[in-house]
Image (cartoon, rainbow, N blue to C red):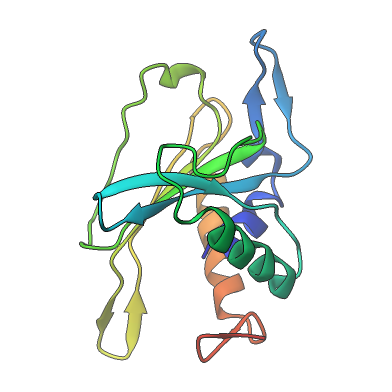
Length: 168
């Protein structure tokens, strides 16, 4: 899912738009995911980011290396140096949900998308994964979000991206 989210984010400027330190609007040429990992022993989370690679196998390799190198590091930033061109992805694998919202302290100036996934479940012959996408209406509206979701679903369905749960 990190790969699929990042692939579609990188297709569209509205998901790569941000403010710099001076408050100027700009568009990153590419984005990388910054995702949470859970430490069972302390019941805390840490952030790791992974460079994006358009080929799934290369992204998967970079992701696995990051988990191996930084996955056991405690603290908020398990992998140091989170780049400005990162977007947050978090997971709540213990429950499903119909909606999820984060209230950011200075949210009015945060233009990048925020993704939260929940516990997947099976309904008849289909699998469902709750996904909350929080966007800033100043750069993204319903049209853009619907296009994003449609492209994400199509990418997931494409043969060759995921085959029986194994990387191709």
